[in-house]
Length: 381
Image (cartoon, rainbow, N blue to C red; front, side, top):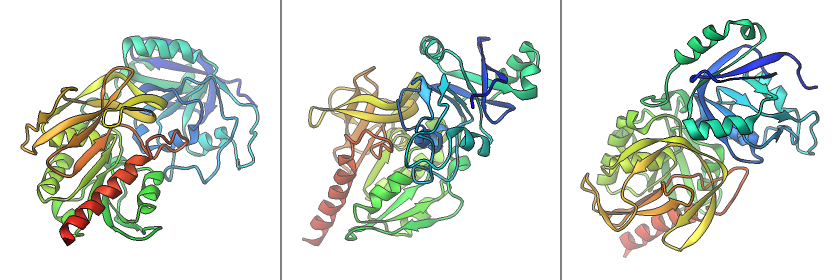
């Protein structure tokens, strides 16, 4: 049943959108962002990269396929709040075990429905992502000025380090599920379950370490490679992760990074990062692979990007040799991938595991595997 209790979505610039309560009741705060996927809402909700954000779905009808335990990308919902236009009145999928509303209530996620999400999306595209709050239940009765004051008191994403919030507390292992070729250390900055499964399916024993792991802890495992995962927050606030990556690269360990791991490779190589006006979020983002000339439709979730020249071969300011931008966004020319030419390291800004699809970028896990096998072959000759 669709709720009838009122709720309001308040942006830090004073814009207010009154709708209906959805999920848990109360108040919540975070950075307002929009995701353009028409499906995959369960994977979005459980993606740790969305920590600290109020996610608005641009697709108007959400919840029709319900939820289940198989499609979770982590152990919990991470979004700070959830905004939809028309929540489904029924669940209609043979895999569903409960409704989306059930999960939001159980996860204590305050949401809102029944607002013009297209209008809000257009506003955010023009004005940029900003702090926001959702108020329902007794908090809906707060004076508008008081609600706005609470929103503006919230933390901004710029300068925010959220890795410790989403990372595992203890090391754990995901064994290879096919013929073993070696081991990969994954620094968990907000890793998704699918990523670990795809690495294991390429023959890696996957050693997942907390984000606080030191260079010595990484190298003590004698890994065949290092992997930095996706995750939330500002890469400029993660200098410790950058220092570890630089040390491991100097030790000759191959590297693959995705999303946050791409931004951290960029910083490790000596380039800067910057905040995008409204980010890339959804499962329909077009990217050009300059190596092959192929256009990929990709899954993305990032609000920051690497600041590096798009054309030509670059020299790493941090002394790691030649570098090139391997992938670019076809929407706004944002750097979507980096390839090192003198060391074994590459990264992409998007999510090749693409839970909920698309699967155009799955080849990157094979490219990573082939890189490790080529190194092993050279060492054995």
